[in-house]
Amino acid sequence: MLMSRTLFGVILVLGSISSNLVAGAASPEQTYVRPLNEDCVARELGNSLGPDGSLFPTPFVMDGDDSTRDGFKTTVNTAVGFTVTYYDTYKVVDNTISGQTYVLYVCGSDKPSVGAPGVSEDAKFFQIPLTSVSVAETVPYAFLEALGVDDRVHDVSPFVTSACGQKRVNECGKSAPAYVDFASNSLNQTVMKDAKANVDSIIVSSGEDDNVFLSFDAEDDPGVLNRAEWIKYLGLFFNKEKYASDIYNGIVESYEETAKDAAEKGESKPRIAWVSHFVYGDDEHYDVSLAAYKKQYIDDANGQNVDIDEILKEYPGARVSAFSPTTVEFAWDGNDSFETKEEAQKAFVEFMSSLDGVIDETFAMDPMAYGVEEFKKEFGLTNADAKTLSWLEPGLIFRLDGELSETKGLDWFETAFTRPDLVLKDVDRVVDSSRQGSVRDSDDVVWMRSIAETPRINTANDCTRVSACDDKATTICPFVASCEDGRTRLLKEDSFDSGVCDYQTCIQQVDEPADTAQMAAPAVILLTLLIVFVEALINFC
Image (cartoon, rainbow, N blue to C red; front, side, top):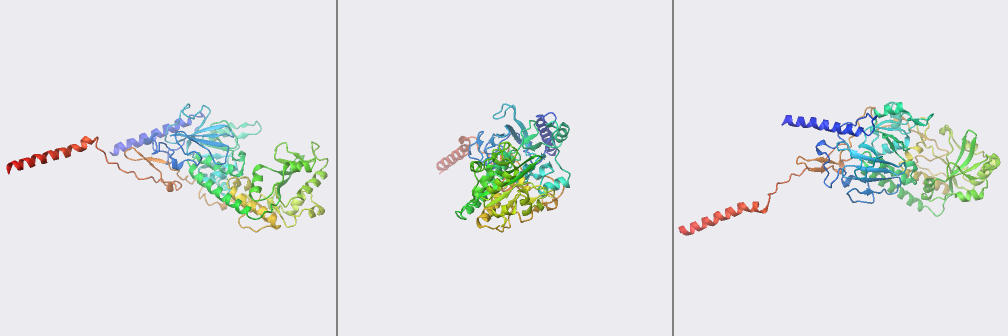
């Protein structure tokens, strides 16, 4: 018996390695082979299905509007940039922003063939859960941390603001390389070759064609909750979409609660604008940003947005930016602009005098040193100008640099995407302070500091998630396991995120007789013998 089990184990390992080598064939240069570990379905399952007919049982799929099976497509709640379709042994993710399709199959199961339902010739294949990812940009890293899978990050952008991200870069030497050679505007093949030996995916925000690239486009999905819902998208690649759905649902509930509270703070709607002074080389202008997500935050915090058409009508010389249709520029370059900087500056001060508070997005080399005097200098404010701005003296100027990295990078451009509910709390403070005419005290401000407040700095020393650079990744348990009789059983939902794979108990089935005649035969024989015995007894008497 021991010999047969050992032989079976060898066959199991060889079979799984074979499956992984086949997976790697999608890209001839890709040499990274996904390890056989506890994330994988046992090889003896093959493509055996769970109790509801799938390796992705209903309790673990992504929340969506459709709850049917047999190749069903789920639609996300607010995001418009992706969909997922579940099949029995794989799932197909469509990124409608990058135009790419991903076929995801659990390690240990067979790779789907091109031509199978939903599997197109141009699809990219990934064995999941992913085990070693390169995160070339900061935003997706924040989502990976929120998912709790940052222990599978091989390297990360050196511009990361997260404390643990900084620790991976500064102490563990896990800084993601530049994959694009900007001189030739093409992929650096030397860097790519090295990456393919160490990672099973490279996460970027553009649709690179190489099979190892995974496009993450939360920033291009309009709406603040839309962007946050991309946690489900990444969850699909780690078999954690249900966990991601629960996180997202909690964020939505928190967001709606804050919006409801803001709506009850009075009928007065302070007029707020997102402003900045832009300087790059010879290009200089004063800007008002009316991006859809920014307007949504002001609206949901019970504030009043400025109107782009109103600005253009009120201030001849103001123009819509050639680079952003939601930005108004007060420029003086002679191209449908003001004649001089003085004219543009005067018009911009007049515009700002119509506001009750501002969110200042002006870039500062050292945010720690940016205060009221720096703000006045950036916008060229004289003492006479200052008297026309009712919000200036009480300090109703708010900045996005409330949380910084050690190198002064803004966490606003990283973590804020994952937590719109916390952003709304910050904006609620901006609006409410502007309503009451003074800065409201708050202990839970994350990103939007008042200009009189000092930014917080995250350092690698603040990281508690990473105890050592060689920490082992937490197991992501398969949703199904096998019983001794060949049937499958489900993972217990309460053990899903623990890293300890605890499955439902296998219930031993009692073998049923083949048919009713077989069940009745012993009783018939016994009854016949009883009758014979009784007749013999009567005759004897």
